[in-house]
Amino acid sequence: AQKITQTQPGMFVQEKEAVTLDCTYDTSDQSYGLFWYKQPSSGEMIFLIYQGSYDEQNATEGRYSLNFQKARKSANLVISASQLGDSAMYFCAMRYNNNDMRFGAGTRLTVKP
Amino acid sequence: DAMVIQNPRYQVTQFGKPVTLSCSQTLNHNVMYWYQQKSSQAPKLLFHYYDKDFNNEADTPDNFQSRRPNTSFCFLDIRSPGLGDAAMYLCATSRGVSREKLFFGSGTQLSVL
Image 1 (cartoon, rainbow over the protein chains, first blue to last red):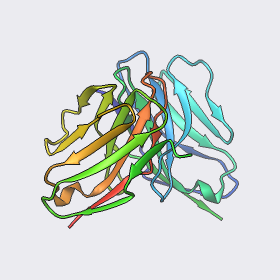
Image 2 (cartoon, rainbow over the protein chains, first blue to last red):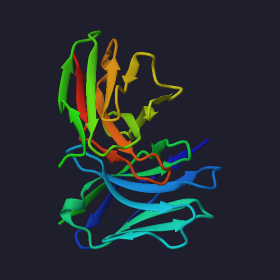
Image 3 (spheres, chains in turn blue, cyan):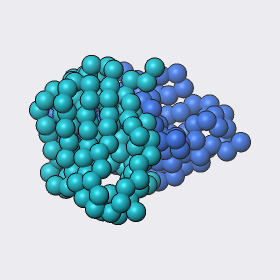
Image 4 (cartoon, rainbow over the protein chains, first blue to last red):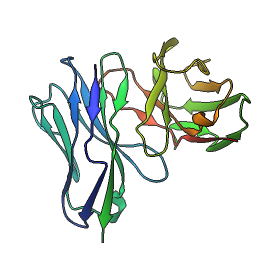
């Protein structure tokens, strides 16, 4: 069965510091996509970054990077130079060949000034 | 320039009174999804349409139905809402390729009195 695990219900980080949000997954598929979404208190889901299972290099998007370790089935999100506006829920998600996208339980990040 | 539009933003209904949530898209995407998200939880996939093909999740209650009359519109019908159906309902779209990200609407917050 496909499963996404985020083990950190909540995380705190000091403004301007980097933070890593953990995500592990379980699948027998060879082809899949890994995504991170941010959900502020307003409720909208904002796409942050994508990593394909066959991509050899770790994805980066501005201050976001994805530490992809395929053998360990982990896809951790690294946010550099945290800003107050980064405070939100962060969801790791996996997309399968049948078009489903399933989400982990989420991590609530709080950036402290 | 909203691309996935959900109306209304807030919906209040009475216990047992049918309610319909609507979603429209300007992206011409093949796939449309409905997710249910309860407070501080991950979005849970209810069903999705690939074009006109309906795909229901095994654990989606029969109380939830969906219609997609054309490419642009998709509706979520809750036939007899219970108190446990109070949640945020998120509509999302994608082009249908497994590695494509989902585009989300702002959601409809449903309250059941």
